[in-house]
Image (cartoon, rainbow, N blue to C red; front, side, top):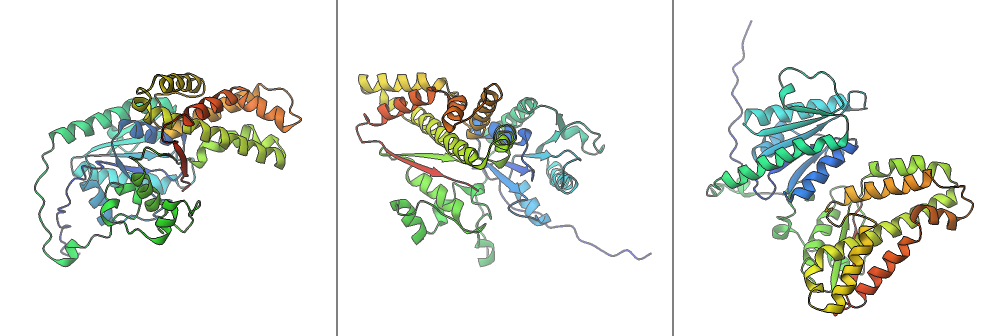
Length: 374
């Protein structure tokens, strides 16, 4: 038998990405457990990078090593074997986790449901049957990342030697390098039209720059006192129960009415949440404004949690509340009866509270809602 000589892969020199030290391998199917994972990460304040097979179908060994080397911790969500595409996704997670373990990185594999794991990595797998069980292991992973950030010594940067090493085309997904967009984003005509408010809808194929435009606009208006930006990114999985419980039992006209009323309500709640989160200190400067602000907080607390910082969690809670009301409701004959069951009369109180506060803002408090659907 002839043995062919081989050489090991050269060592990588990528430095840790301290701006986004967490790397997450996202499952191709959204589940309550995966949504809970991202909700906890969003609340932590740590930026993270994502590999999403729905956006990028394949990841090379070189890219996997590069992403792992640039991370302090790695998380992945394994799917139940009964789901379509689970074997490919789980094998990819196992490969990336193996690279991470070899590089002495902290790894967490969240497993949907219980089933036997291979002996070589069963110690880093955490199985769960309810989304609330995800909180503890993810929190421990975040705390470990924070500790590593505090302990890490940022080594001096070594300048690239040749032009190819200096060439950086950026990450394929703009979400993975939001903080770096400012240094290389080209302000195109489409961006300028969106900034001036002449364009309300931005469409294009994947990779055409829609997300980059959105996050650059977000940073442009972040410090403005006259504009409030409400950034929302719903996942399709979150609407499955709403479709099954509510929409499946309606005709087409009622379905359209329900979705329109639902999104009016969600956007109103998100505007209220954003105002409360960003305008607290400004409201302290005037007694009358503070009174209206406190009234808005009181009314909004009956609709959602003021402390919740993640849109996905708030959206799931709103859908659960609406479906529960629908299940307990009586027969529906008119759109008005449907709206009354789904939202009751308290939506008017919230609308008045938001309107009263906004119109008393000294700068006019121009409302600007940017919706991002990916």
